[in-house]
Length: 198
Ligand code: NI
Image 1 (tube, rainbow, N blue to C red):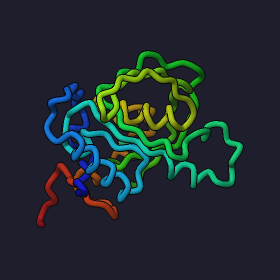
Image 2 (image 1 turned 90 degrees about the horizontal axis):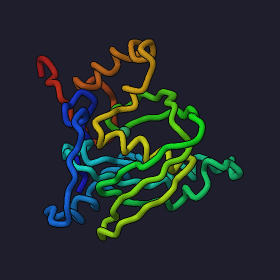
Image 3 (image 1 turned 90 degrees about the vertical axis):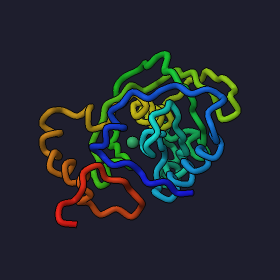
Image 4 (image 1 turned 135 degrees about the horizontal axis):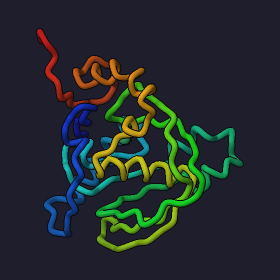
């Protein structure tokens, strides 16, 4: 089932999400629905707060990145990105290392806006998968980048929070319009501010 994606301005996107345990009801169905929702919106990651649930869960599939990077097969940042499909439950980033690098990020909750965001190159993360197996892994390149962006969502942080005050000011009108639903988007969204006169 495709779920509506919560738009910029909804308080659920600003909340630090709660951990869950294995008794969480219908978890596998929720995960399936999140993948379906992410794929139809052509995203590479989706965090539970983006479908209105303030829990520490996100899904990723970096495969579309691989298609985009086809002509740059030697791009070391894209290594292993094809088929990089994972579920992260109760993740904890233990360490972020390496040099910060800029990447032009977007977000399904903030349609039609892309901005350069600086993040460190490498992360070490602990998490549970959908079978409640615990993992500790190191990720780099685009894999790390996708995880860092989604991890921010469960911390109540959006990529726009990481921009310089000048950049944020330049897009403030667009952001306000997104909250009101004044944006053209080809997937189902839930807008926090009611449109006047409708
Ligand atoms: Ni996002």
